[in-house]
Length: 213
Image 1 (cartoon, rainbow, N blue to C red):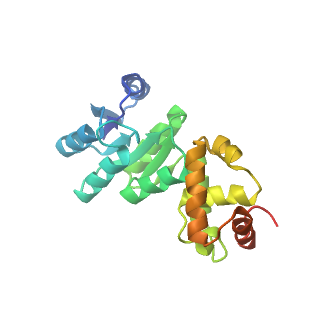
Image 2 (image 1 turned 60 degrees about the vertical axis):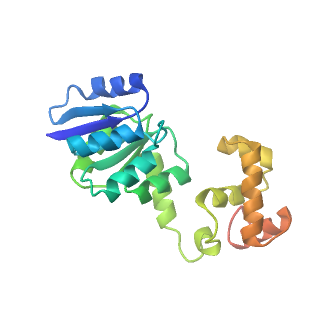
């Protein structure tokens, strides 16, 4: 029997998962947590096989909760179940020790499959997330990661859009972040690439294969 702990701050979503998994013969929900701190407490007390962990929770977020459990030697396999699919969130969760990463739009069979896979010691990712992970680790010597090692995942994403000729407002819209945040990313990119203007950043980016010829 797979013992499951659900950590999510939305009661309706927790209830939905409970109803969804009620018919399974091999998954038993042993606890529910509405904060990251509570998730750590219950995981320590109940020693579940798998934890479905939301990322954005009050008190302590899912990434830090996962990190603390990992450092404490918890045997629970954490599968992130969240709305956030940006590279920063995905790779931060992986670095913290998560075994899987699903989006909240995942179908019931996908969630069940992820729980069983994590319980069996496998790493499991939703289709959209798997593509990001594969692309990240497939980066070779000529990749942007190798060309610009000082950049974060999000900064590389912004740089690629800059190299494609997109303005800050378009980038903000496409990434669903504020214009101020885009400006901060661009400023950091200029500093790390040691350039003083957009055209110079574009030249460097295109030389590394970003944004077209």
